[in-house]
Length: 564
Image 1 (cartoon, one colour):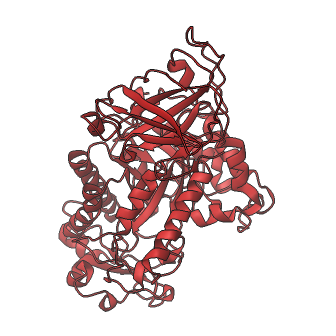
Image 2 (cartoon, rainbow, N blue to C red):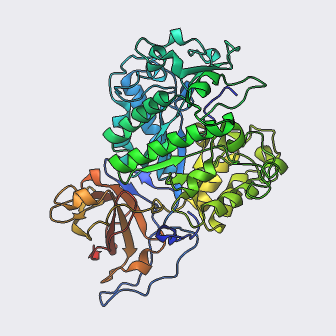
Image 3 (cartoon, rainbow, N blue to C red):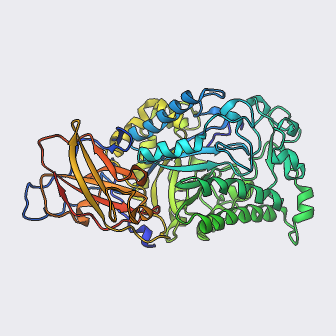
């Protein structure tokens, strides 16, 4: 949900939705290359070859990502207390596997329980790193993760849980006893910010910041935005936990905060929704003010409201925890108000499930996002494959997730998929993820362009192309200088795409890069405009071109062609 809680038309829309794609392989510090297939062009130096028709199997733009969960060490690190070298090696393996599956982004959990995977002035170091809350792990995991992800051409979105303070004591965490928090923890110092839920469940209950307390909300804004304002994250990502999922008939004990801060509200449910709205809007406003270009996305429970509760706007579902009515998260409003840049409803059901059909829910979200500047990605229940009895397909149909990808490509506003979690992708039960990789992710893809707040980068130049140690090295950049790190262009270009065509041609035009057939690499600007094409074959003739992108993936003009 991501289920890491193991207890219970605009310009942006003019993108190419051109179907499928295997993976990019990370080869070296600044290298991203795809398989050996290249676009076919006649060997000629008399002009550009005719632009091929767009190939629906190889979309130019599509988000493909996994969640890397740290809560109770689901994915990373594999257990608390590992030495620095082992933690780093495990993280690099997760990133390399993301690349091998053809992904172009990861959602990396860095604030699972009101703690931090970076040296934060607001909250203590996470116990999931060292085994003890507040203990320095000996390095900066977030800094390392950002650098290693970008080195592999992956976007990295910092994944934050907004209000949860602790996991259950049965998970070897604090449970509902705030005295077990490390000294100096904001929740320990401000007990009026905190609600235990369920309050009568000492082994299974958890602590939460009360969204109804303005000071608690502001603390969360400050803690989360500190990471976004001090690290080169590509996105800020929330999961589905706002007010907690209900446990039996237990009440969330916020009568005191309602009495103090409820104002004119007579309906506590409406007040709770407003509290979450205020929090989401505050994050949005601060990021757009202080980090223009960074993306803000939320991954809620898949159903907003059931039709029984809202016959006009609700989906044709009978889900048990619709966000509006149960979690007090008005996710549809956040899309329509465009407070967020993307939404990832967790549609963790098979298409055949009558009460929550995958197809019905995805089509509902497709309609909600249509005409907005909010991108729609779908959260996929990889963890259910060969493990869930909820629907028979999870255990006997390896193509259930495959059909999900196909449906998304058929719809107008679905821009990709995110898989929960990295461990389940690695397990590849029933070869379900292998089928997706081989059928749909055989070529790399770029991140879908989002609502642009920056001017597009200057046209890049390929400054050098030479063979070294049997591999072809390219150097390029915007503005003067050897690579992307030189001149004013470095401040404008965040990413580059490298395109390769068989044979020699004079020009490369927009039609040639309308799909990903010729795409061989995504390169972050930190690579200083250097790319190694490890799949090029010496003795063959190639033509290369490069395009530059800002953080919103607005494309530059295409570079001049470079013949090799």
